[in-house]
Image (cartoon, rainbow, N blue to C red; front, side, top):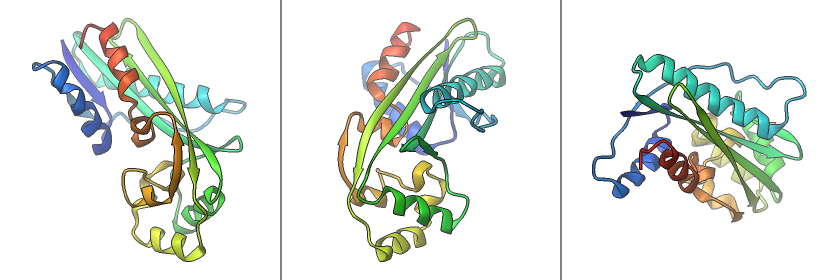
Length: 193
């Protein structure tokens, strides 16, 4: 049985690799699964991120062309007052997102889905993140680093953006992009760990 991570994210690969200490034979490959990430009308944030993770896992399974593959899909979104903050379109959009997060608490929802082509299991993990108060100079300096440009909510907690996070309540690894406890539990259901 081969394990595949349907993600091009280096952060997700690093996190998944952390589980290798549980099994010396643990290994995986990764591939990018391209899906439409448009939120559907009336779709709630948790349902949206769960759908994306499941679609990535299933798309990854189709790409592997291996019947014995088990595929992991994952997606992370930032939610502030019911608004889903995706990846910024440009620098101005990143500045707008960071200004809205400044001094406020928001939710980071990460869904992970695992499929073997016959069954698909998933879980959504929600973590509360509180940002410190940011000045316009803080925001401009951070956006100038380009780090926010490929991150949901325009920040990465594991990078420079972590300096803005005053507090988290929940899973740090989920905020980075892959909830380790829940991923381990799902993989155990598929007899991977």
